[in-house]
Image 1: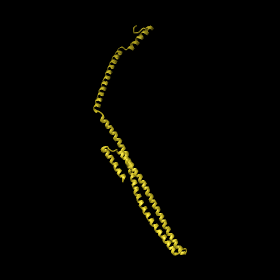
Image 2: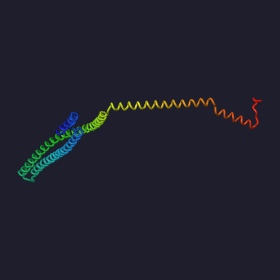
Image 3: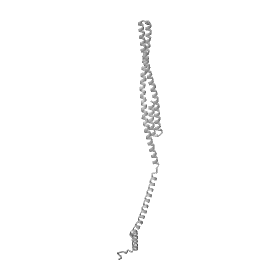
Image 4: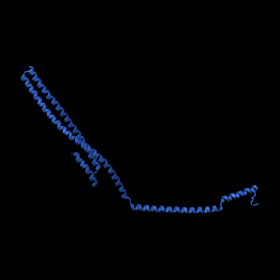
Length: 238
């Protein structure tokens, strides 16, 4: 069938893409699915037509069977009329014979219609199987298409990343990092040197302040001046 050939082409598309990148597997798969959907539409249309012919054949068989029964009843009525003297026997026999001939013709048409229906029903079963196969393959390849799209995205992203990595000058980058490292070490050493200078200055000021105790000396002088103003003499002096 056509769709099997298309499935083969779809399978080939990915293989060829992996080998030489000439064909786009996603586009090939999408086209294959579109073709299968067209086949499905045509198969459903044909299936409906065959089912319609089967129904028509069944109706014809029933119609011819009804006619056969009708002719049989008519033949019996003609013979009964002849028995009752309502019609001449020869005429009744002639007409009954014609009715029976018509009955046989109707039964023959019925048999033909039943044969047609049987063939149509067999075709329906086969076509329904084909339709189901196409539906299953469409569903299968739609799922395959989703996976294929995901794989292509991953492949493209990986390819892009690898291309970027390939363009990076590893030697130049390492050299730049080494220079930056040296700069940082130099800045850290300079900061430490300024810290030591600041600590040295603070130590000298602290020693001077400790030796003099400016606040305490100033407070002592103010206390002596206050006592002198108040006429208070130091008991130790007396």
